Length: 327
Image 1 (tube, rainbow, N blue to C red):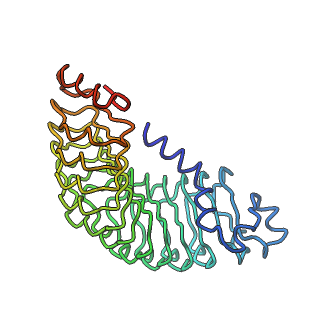
Image 2: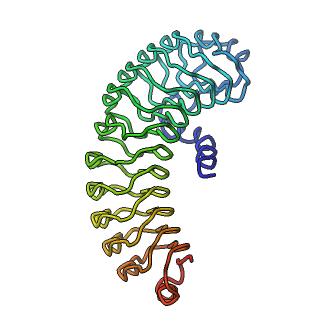
Image 3: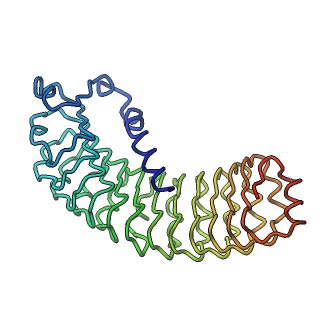
């Protein structure tokens, strides 16, 4: 259900995100063509072309006549082959191909030197060519809902990348190439089979959102506590039995999700997360909660449902956090 909602909202707000990203200059004023026939009437004027949900079985070859094309959206079709000629669209800044049937990406993708957004989610991909490392202007790369279990080492060259989505794949180890992407702001790698988060995660100092739920981790590296720009940390549906005290240093954190783990206790240092608005501890093994949690005056939702708290412990927290508590 979580995955469905995330995909739904990703599609819903995708156009809004791109409008913000390219809000300056003539691109914002350009007409968005939604028909090949209409676009062919004035091919030199076509800057934005959206053919989503068009039941396309093949990549439309007419696209290569639009020499000024900067935004091309072909999501939610039935395209199975991305032609090598894609490398001719050198003005492209946005390319979305989500929800198709593509099983390979041609190496010519590396010629799209101006590309800022590349969306390849919900296809049949298990690899991406090393030439992706040439896309040095890329700010968003979405590879979610495919069959990846590794990434090319050249991915580490994408120094301008802000958002990387790798959720719903087949990773069993944390892809180390990510650790060189030190401008990352958002990292989605939930719903994989990863059992260890490397200590080097501490290199991603700019990270604000880290979604890692539904993996196989049993413990967290203390280095997570050095990511002091984190605002959202999603660690639900793992196998955690304890939380490092260092998480109490994340003083910008607003959401911390730990539901569906095996936590027997939480550190009192979580009471130092002064910006925290949501703390979800549903379905763990907690018998007590540190009194220091009551210092979280900004907490709007505090979920303690399905733990092993005594009635007296529950009563205490009903009194302390009556506005936010959920049992």
